[in-house]
Length: 343
Image 1 (cartoon, helix red, strand yellow):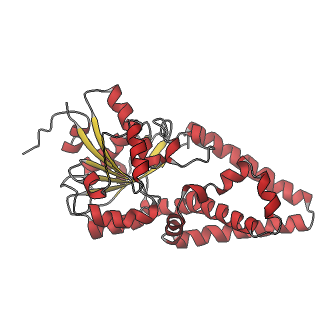
Image 2 (cartoon, one colour):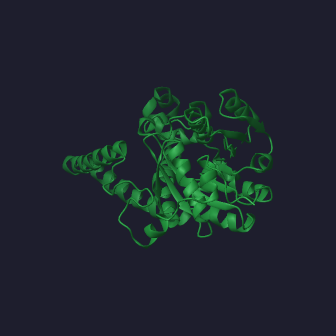
Image 3 (cartoon, helix red, strand yellow):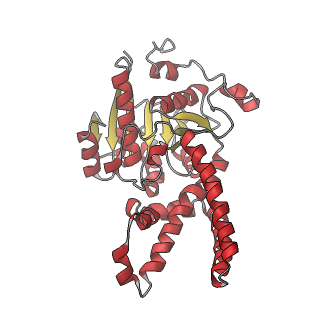
């Protein structure tokens, strides 16, 4: 029986759900237990995660959650990520794989070079959630779930320094929590993040700011319903410091996204002002049709390129390297095989 020591820093919806999914995997395969130690800046949130059976132990110190662990998961509020790198960099044992679920990858890779030792390996990860949760608009710890990643995907972005064993471990980790591993480029990912994470948060904040400064807000606020809640939920789920850093650390990509939306809003405003029924209908129908196509693909996780597992795609230079990510002491440890390279 090979026990895997896991530290999870950040016990919001994402971190607690990862812990619950690992516990589910342990129940399905008792020969592969995960012992999970958790840390959260809010002690109450950590206590609640432990009460729900997500943790074996809890600590109020991030370095204690990271020290001596084979896998460390970073799922902290974004404004706290850089400081976490500084603190845990001294605590990680040689061979530790750090799975960073922060919404941006390039800043984390810079912080890893600055603070991590040469024998601790960073893999950036982005969870694409179970489509059953696509419209719930909830991102708090109370809505953590063991199936949050089922039928979803895990975008994996290794650093150039990460050895094959560490990348294979990240792929296995995705499988264990129910997601399909897919390999992505960090530069592309941060551009995507501006579109699908930063822009929705900024639009929700901007819409609320505009409404609450309007003379009619005192009456309009009484009519707030789920549509309004889904638009503005980032203001409840995220601290302003986290939203600030998410936007500023990716500001060039964010500016491009904002410019594109401003152009479209300008065109829609012009159509409304001119009472141009045909132009408005055309924009709405075109958007609706494209959205239906995206939603169908998202629910089926079918993007027309097949499953992106190592060795499963048409091989290019990168895929030949990826298809060799088999064996290695970290992967054998994760899968419960004897570590015959020890010593």
